[in-house]
Image: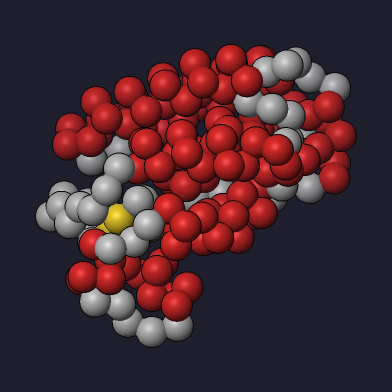
Length: 170
């Protein structure tokens, strides 16, 4: 739902945290969940480490809107499902969560939520779809090589997102 973006962004930024530059994270230098590569593309030049450290929620909000929320038709998804799909999209890209939603509703799994998928979503209980997305997301995480380093955090995040999303269902 369009009205949910600011609320979801606040929850997302809690999950993403602040500045990190872990040798185990393929994303490298990251702040508020935005990698240096993504930020550099956004600003059209190479950023400095200090610029990355100084990012604010206002700096990253338009990136999350354009690069993630808009790609999954966030504003057209039911309340709760919008959050579940956005959080996973930020964490893993749009294709996996979009395909999980499409499987849940019986749509063609092309990885792009569009009018046909939205029509099928409208026919299903959002809680069913949210739970399905949670289950598929968890199985995906558990199959990753990096699960030994990041698995507890990913699982906690997935569970928190599930509970938050279920509370948002009207």
